Length: 66
Image 1: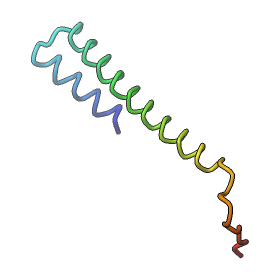
Image 2: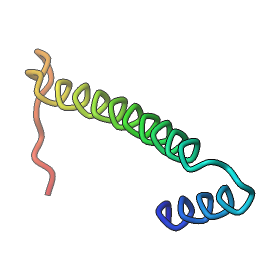
Image 3: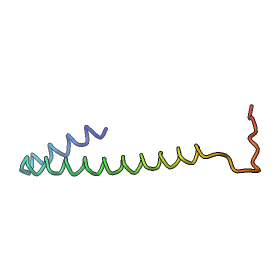
Image 4: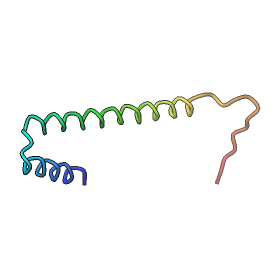
């Protein structure tokens, strides 16, 4: 879905005469945004993993659920 959208945007830009170097620059900027989002997601996953790895607090009994 995202790939097809990107292709359409590139075609529209080319149709109106946007230079290829500008299109490439915009694509690189999009990539950087996606990498930033991935970094935020990875950090969130790490926080959750750390919370799950902590030892249970005293006074809390683990109960088996069937």
